Image (cartoon, rainbow, N blue to C red):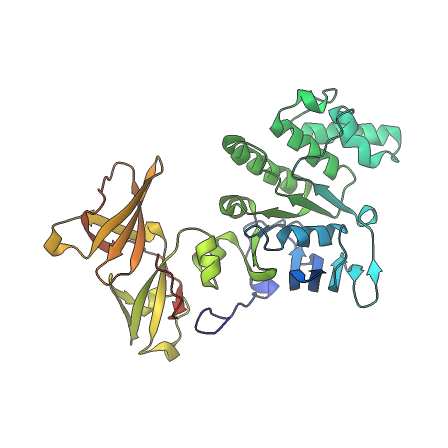
Length: 386
């Protein structure tokens, strides 16, 4: 990866990261240092380092095959790392250099699997009680009752899994994982088996439950909307590497690489020329102070400015006044996504209200609508076309 393709990825010091959730401690409860996992000739995870703070919900996000599920299995103790160290609450649970390895059942880690993995011959209450069978009967009963109430299933304790809906099964699986009071909860694609409406409802519900219990959690998903909506921080992975770790807002608005920018939603890049306090682009001048972190050393150089569809406004106009033409449109219900080729050949996307109808091949006047700071990247030969 060259300097021309991406800016350096640097993780902010813990003290510099702001959280709206005051329940999150600055103390890391999970520490991953230089962890790699090799399978035969394939390196699934390579020199990954990451801290997760007490009370935090961190999501590993990336495309299929990026190494996020392998990372989760390494944290759970279901795989041994080839290199590196994993610590929970300061104590090593995996250390490749001295062959330390604490098995999954002794790690004080709970796991919610993608398919929920409930025991079909047990009731909901019995499933929740499974991991605390060694507790005194009275304490065990109180714990199960409290957890079923917490997940909204206080009246479903005697129901079998086959009598429960998908969302109810997920709640039982979550309660079962929380029952032993684990230090860390791991969630493996927890919403992927639910329909769209239930998925949105359940991810909000799961976040509420985790925050009420104060449990530290690491979730895995390939769904960008899910990661951005429930996480305190998001860790984007690709090809076994960690690309960026940041708050949802920061990682979306100020991605550190073109990959992160494109993976977290529609991304267009328009060329600009820096001249003093102005960046000159095909969509008009942009003040240097509007380009996030653009150092003075980039004066008289070319850059690419990142635009999201809501940063761009297109209006139908006469051919002589147009600076672009609509080449693609996708109806999304509340909105319509337009792809527009500019006179120079560069391509941008614009998101409009569904009532703003622009036809294919229609000439348009395109302008910037963004009022926030814009991200940028050094110009390179692999600039995306749209």
